[in-house]
Structure formats: C-alpha cells, structure tokens
Length: 403
Image (cartoon, one colour):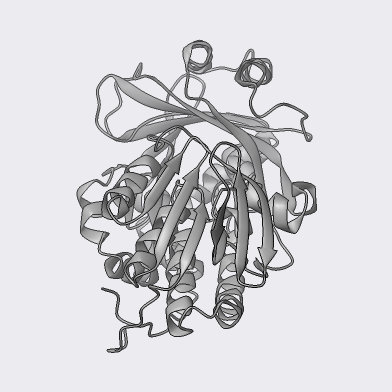
C-alpha cells in the first residue's frame, strides 16, 4: 500500500449482484469514499451455497487488506478428508483436506454475509430488483429497473454471475461468451444419512458421480453433489421441477447411496443446477460499464472463481483510486492486470467434469491411481504448489491506503 489516500467521494457506482463479487467491490470502493448502490434480483441476501476456498499469499493479502481475513478463518468449514468409495461404500482413495479445500474454506453464503455486514451501513442495497436498461450518456449511465425508479450513475459494474444480465444488456447474448464443457452439476441440502462429520464420500460410475458431504459438523444436515456428462440440454433455468426430472432420469439405477440422494432431491427447495461452463468475453469493459467475477471470467467449478472475483474487485477498486475515478484509465489497467490472471485460473477448471465423473471404468481407475499418488506424503507439497500457482500468478500494485 502507498501512504497516499485517494478519495472517490465524487463517484456514484451501481453494482449488479450481491453474491460475492458485488459486495467485495462495494467493500473496497466505500473504503475509498465512493457512493455505492448494489442491486440484487433475489429478495434477500442468499445464504448457503457451495463451500469456496482461498489459496496462497495473493488471496490472503487481498482479504487481509479488506479486513475480513480473520472473520473468514473464524467461520471456515474445517473440512477434513474426502473419500472416493465403491458401490458397497468401501473406501478406494482418500483426498486430503488441503487438496480439496485450499488454505481456508467457507460457505459462499457465509462469505457474502461477512461482506454485507461490513458494508450494509455505508452501501445502499436494493433487493428484489434488476436492471432493465442501460444507456450511456456524456457524464454517466442512465439506468432503468424492473421495479424501481430510473436513476443516473457514473459507472455500472456487472457482478451478476455466469448468466449476467448486465453482460447481456451491454456486451451481447450469452451464447457468444459461454463455453460449455460437456457436464452438468447440481447441489442441494439433504439429511445426513451417513452420519458424516466434516468429511465427504464420492461414488462414480462412467459419466456420472454422486457425493454426500458434511462441511459444518451438523449431525442432521449434509450436502449432495451430482455431476454428469451430457450433451447440451435445453431447459428453463427457472423451472426447478424440470431440472429435478432431468437429474432423476440421469441418475436412475445408479448404485451406492444414490437412491437416498434422489429421494432428498424430490423434497429439496434449494436446488442448484447448471452447466459446467466458462465465460470468455472479448473485453471486460465497454464505456462506463465493467464486468467483474463470473460475469466476465467465470467458471462453474474448479477455477477458483471466488478467489479470482475477490482479487478482481480489489484491483478494480484500486485502479479507480489510483486514477482518481477516471474510468478510462482505471478500466484499461483493470483489464490488463486481471485478464491473464483470470484465464490462468480458468485453465484449472477445464477438467472439472471428468475429475468428478470420468467417462469410462478405465478412466475411473486411472483417476483413482492419480489421486493416490497426489495425496501421498511425497507428492503433497508438489500438489500444493501446483494448485497455488494460478492463484498467485498476479503481482498486486501498491494502491492508495483505504480508510
């Protein structure tokens, strides 16, 4: 950090999305004095979600600067090893905690809550609304909303996820940017039928995998993870019943504990279902609008997306502070510094589908042999360095001191 403090008190910024990237940017911007509004289509802050992890010194430096490193540690999952099992439940290979959970792991909802608590008194949060139109003017962006009255902002940032509405409005249809990786993933809460305590079990058959895990030590509650190989599917992302039918059909007849997982699927009201995919845009900024996190460089799983989003938020806010709010200079620097870093992290997610659900029995056996090698004491240090390489492949600039 430099010793000079830069004020962005003249800057009025709209952020779309209150998951992780949006609140992370809001936290950084308000500490420079900016006026920030976050609009979120959900009626309230979303809890739960998958566990997310942070790895290496870059993540730690950014989270420490944001003032939330200690709170993340206090609310981490303390997840232990996870085990790949056979159809009868017998263990085939253990996956060490550091292999799956990084240096520190926390539920996405808990992370969002921490950042919300840090910003709720200084940031305007507007829930149950979404951007309808964006029109750039000579001095800002005119914004209309689905529910609220029209407003004018200096800058707009789309931090609204893989299926970003902001990206669609300004950069074009999602089909231009979403790269499908031949797999789908689903997750939901279920009863802790296996009595797990901060550990997990995974079972694979060719092209599909089922996992049951317990991250928080709750003896009654667990999480289910389903991954399957597939052609591109056509479905309504708002039609949960249709998504449940897809999963029930794809996993019918699968062994191990799949029947109990499918029974829990019938009853769940918090299903997450999406393609394993990445976002590749031609540019991260257009005029006074920028993309952050999954909206600009997302990966459904395995690409350290949360860490990249938090680093991206830190860099975007820092560049605006260095430029005194002059968005052309700041946006150009943000694009230059984040693009290669984000792409490097995305590369680690390309094999997420086959990692969980290899296509053949032979590939399953080969993967398990690789797991045994990587989890051995001899290879543990090497694997840790390998997973941290992408997460630390950025040199952070000395930004103005935040308030």
